[in-house]
Length: 172
Image (tube, rainbow, N blue to C red):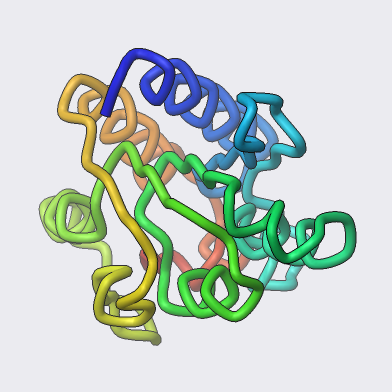
């Protein structure tokens, strides 16, 4: 992981903060082309009631509609949190390239357990267990504190569990 990767991961954390400010779970992602061009970005939008509105899933859909198979394979998805199984599968099925994440599912699960947040309805798994052919890098230890604080604010900030990704439970 280099400084370019960290710059994109910092943007993901900014997007996660934007999601939180809108009352959604703090997850953000950026899709970057092989030449470094930011192609698309997004944050969680599950407060709408559609719990599949994860940014990683949305970027996979966008890539399938707008990029050639070669462009998808050369692209990198940066994300504030390791993909959930649904997003990891979508990433692999669409044929996207490398994933770089700021925080792991293991870290998130530990933080949420400390906050007494119940486990998710779908088991958290490392990306490599779901999509073993995808190159994966992470976590970025220098961003863990910021991401942890976003999740603490979400789960201790009085947000309604009905508005979040998994009924108040983590899904990555």
